[in-house]
Image 1: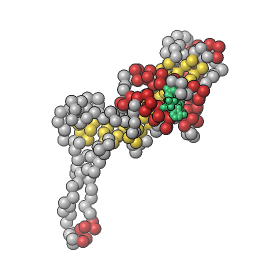
Image 2: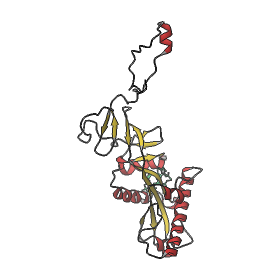
Image 3: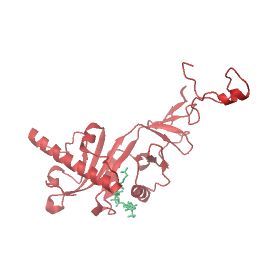
Image 4: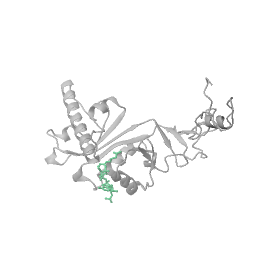
Length: 253
Ligand code: ACO
């Protein structure tokens, strides 16, 4: 994507990391220069966010400079500094951030996790399927010290699912109610050394990587259930003596 200004002037390398300050790495200048460069970075982030939304058929962009300013997220930009006679073009964008999520595994067990998430990913149409996406993704993995299977992906497109299979062998996505997707390898084995000691009273196991597994009565089918009033009518019961397994009792009961 081309811009009116020289992209290679503000971005010093082929992959740059933009945090909520919107100050590009290596910036050195006075206050006026800072205002100027931040406005240019905001323009790039907005343009790439708009292009990504259009490519995904979304009516509103997921990535905007304004949102980035308010969130603890990172935007990685891929820059071709040689293009346009050395003025440079921006060819890709990848946004990541940690989110607090409840994720179900294949056994229906839910886990409270704060994994690094892939939130928005886009390579310019003129450069797709040439390996740039992989280059950007690999840079992000290194920076975040993450493995592909550690990531949760927000509403992945078919192209992104295909990308994950091709480059990282990740198949059979586990689609979640919250629209995130994870793959096998996301959950450490409950029996493995990765998960610490005893299950405390609240039924939670804490894994070394911060992943919490609810193993006790807080499981999917363990929510408190009211007694069945139809059953009471049939059996002519006045007092409630439910024999059904119920979840944890609420303190006020
Ligand atoms: N159709 C199907 N698979 C595709 C397509 C496509 N049009 N484009 C890329 N892929 C997948 C394929 O597995 C492809 O391998 P192949 O060419 O051998 O079939 C592989 O990606 C290519 O890898 P790269 O060249 O490294 O990836 P690329 O630079 O194309 O970037 C990306 C991948 C970001 C998904 C890009 O295709 C793109 O921007 N797509 C449009 C926007 C989009 O769908 N973004 C993801 C939204 S979901 C989210 O952001 C959380």
